[in-house]
Length: 377
Image 1 (tube, one colour):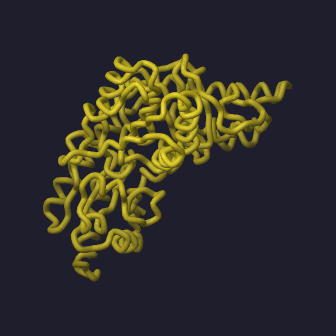
Image 2: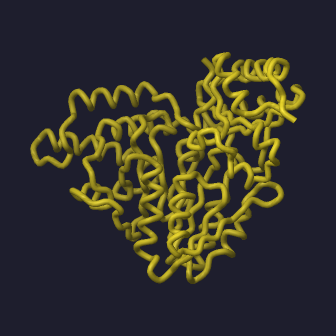
Image 3: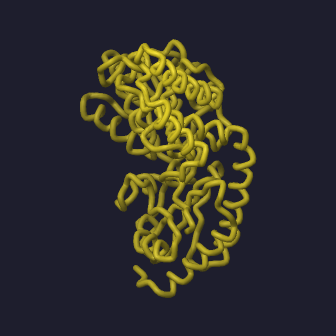
């Protein structure tokens, strides 16, 4: 099996699996319980919190656990709307955000908020100056992802947010960091973000767990209510096994970010070089992009058709965001892909255990597909 769909989800690493299983078997108590078993579960919770905080170079009290990045993004956006939205009704975001950001923002837009969507320029890139100039005294929130999940493009978040916070210190800055955390060398302070969303299953941890970083001094109101867990910001009994697995994955890979990044650069460059030898295949590149994600257009073959053809050969890719379920990508359209490219682009996303031989096999099977499949005009 050749798995090139790591932006959708990653295979849990051995350390994460071990942590989940051990916690399920020996540390299954409720961390809110006052007895010794509850204290042991709370200690596991806090240990994972400290590990993730160190990876972001921040304090553990800034980390709040959620069920995943979707909840973290929703919490960040709707909480800001609740705290500041009565007097400030403007949100600045981009036209290339993940649905877990774009859909909550759209909901707020339908309910009276003004939303400015920053679109890529002719080179397919977001200009930091456009983000900055869109912010004014009526703005409550700026929300931008760090790495685009469909193309790998790296947005100028740190530069834009630094200027925004200097000009408008009370504006809340939020970053969906799902495709950047543990892949790029980042910290909470260098991003200049008040709120940062993270996910466990994108970094070799389990599904069903994420986190929201909240900068000290930033007020976050809950959007669901209950037992007051996570300091009242996110009620509901914490999923200790999943959280332990999340922490174990972060700990396992926190010292190899540079090493893995360099390997991804080599793989990405190799894909670009080899793709040039295959007629009708284009790797869509940006001046600033994550080597973990590659957008590949195969002329005249529908992406979903190619996806299933490759699957039969044991190669797994994506036709875009896993959340899109095969629909035409608004994100790629915003990047300037024409209608033909929208129908003919697949996403490859790499992990540390992929290699050049797998890329060779991918391109070999693409050539076979070009010969065997019915082409579109």
